[in-house]
Length: 59
Image (cartoon, rainbow, N blue to C red; front, side, top):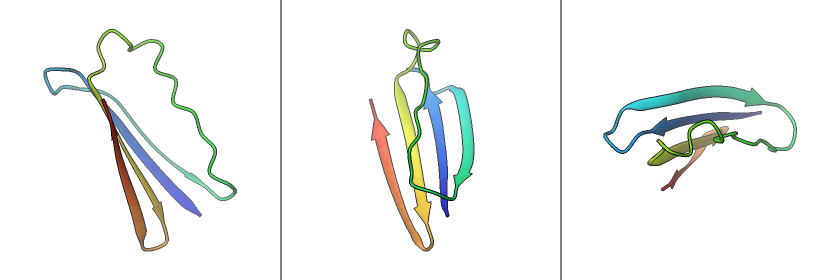
């Protein structure tokens, strides 16, 4: 089981969108940012499997 959490931030640091979900099969997901492309500065993604958590930042 895999838990995924992501948050989108604007250039001034405000939270634009935030989502969390859990998947039981292979981790395949897509984040649709087409509505936010003008205002997104950073996307933080956290992926947890058991006791292992991987964190990514996309700018």
